[in-house]
Image (cartoon, rainbow, N blue to C red; front, side, top):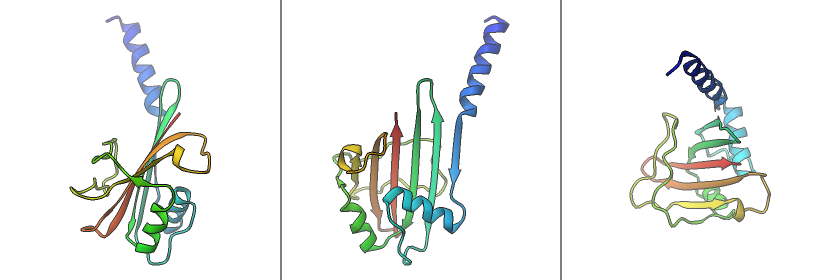
Length: 150
């Protein structure tokens, strides 16, 4: 490979890598804001733990964003969320997207996974998306994975 080709390839790879960004909600205020952005309402006081991470990757013609959210299980909140257009998923797995955050847990075996897409919501977010949600009873947490494209 010629030196010029190597330099151009390296430069192109560096530009693409620099167009990726991971955001993590560190403060309770940021965590609540991530929860509200995701579900459209504030978390109840009984939700004592919230983890929120998003990752944007710039691609050649557009980009993708992945969102991981985990929060303390609260039955009222969970029922309100599931009632917002989710259906029982036909998939028994959730996409394994990297880089997932350290606190992230995949769904355990035999858990009900709920899903929805942009077709299942009344508001147009302007992007196509897939969402997966489940209650991990052993962890006492609810987990959500959302992937935007386009």
